[in-house]
Amino acid sequence: MREGETEAERRRRWIEREAAKTQPKTVRCSTCGKEVDEFMEIAGRALCIDCYLLEETEESGAIEMRGEGSGGG
Ligand SMILES: [Zn+2]
Image (cartoon, rainbow, N blue to C red; front, top):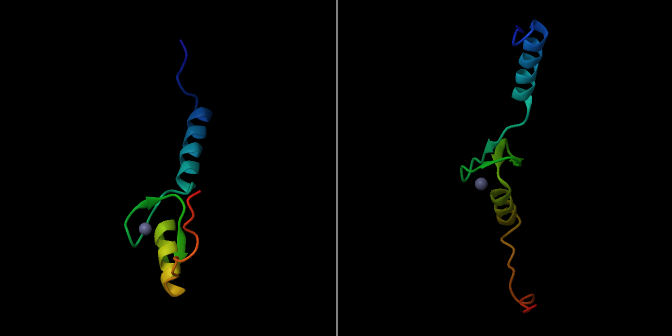
């Protein structure tokens, strides 16, 4: 008969669990509420990439993207 876990193994599992806690988790975007892995921080707020680009565009004065560049391809 064998024991399932030794003390050392139990300890190792506990360490693994603790390590998992410190791993980065998803952050909720403060604008749209979407949970994302990658985010940008602006003025202490976490923004997803989409909202970050939106804010950046607004800040830089609503870049207009019309005129050239409507080629078919
Ligand atoms: Zn967002």
